[in-house]
Image (cartoon, rainbow, N blue to C red; front, side):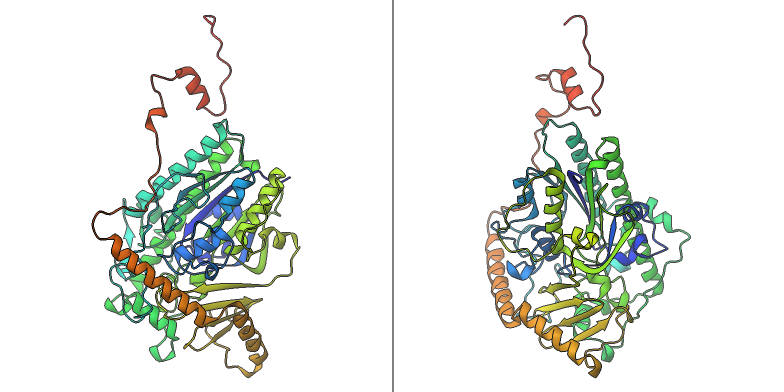
Length: 517
């Protein structure tokens, strides 16, 4: 039997190249490093779409986003698509979410029984890209370079305020799990927005890097004539040339990012401390994951939306006490769609519950199979259908080789073993003709780009029309309103105060049996 409870700690825009256990010697991530030393680190983990909402939909459903239309940051997840929260509830779990998941639409739970905070991003159709005019920026919500120009320390920000709430709510959920009369095991997702831009860090974490030599990007920005079309589009998306900035700006921004990685690491440590305090540590599996990475100036690019490694690789660490080998590293490529099968296997091993028959085919495979040596799978897929492109983009990885394609763009092929910085495109190398033929056949099997294009265009049109209509007259938002009944919290006159204090305490105190009873 494995651990019964499951804690998922999710970071936003966290590249593994800025995590200590993934080889970065400058960043301070003691709690992530400890988790990796106790569990399994997946060295080639990928987002299935390098953007917040699509990546999270793949994480939640175990399916590629093209199956149900999770195209972009304003794409809604149909309520008829099951998530791991639905399946775990069927297996007897109490499921909860604290923090960001960027669900879009009226359903803001998608299987979670409890949602402890609102989301940090909007739940409506306001952020729909427009593939009819793919070369035009939507200034209202597109990224720009303000996050780089304005990077540095800050006592408080919108994002710090949010993550402080997420951390506090997650701690409370763990304490509630320990002292509740509900006998079910829990699955809790603690989802932080950091280290996502803006790159503004609390001084206590900023000061951790006072004497640190902050490295500049390894690969500089290519000349325009030497750059690939999608990178050129992303330069325009982020309006990189609208401002002037230099090496000191880049170092300051990377320092703030590293400080915010340490901030998320701090919360991981606090959550693990709470598990220890409540006697739950030995009975709780922990998964560390992110929605996508961050280019951080590599190749002159910032943020995500790219299939280069800094954007599409993510950290993924799994620790199951008494189950997963300590310090193991899995080299085979895995991705977010592998999370749902993993959670179902963990739940079955931890409780003996039967795994429900999936309503939809799952595109992933349990991460435990890789740790147990029970699979020979050596490939994964990522899709991108949002801003910065006007056609569907596809990433295929097999072994150490990575292939990307998009109608109208030159194909790309990189050998990450000999070329980890993706400097030499081997797509036209005669020696790779057979490999290119294999990847092209795989791409055709995966999807029809013209059919995907039509679906994306239709979805964008519908959502733009509806968004415009809903802005007329009285506004009724879909944003989650956390439910709270303060009349049943703390001490109230209709309660037996002694009994209530005992019920809210963990561990339970010694019995109190006064003589007057």
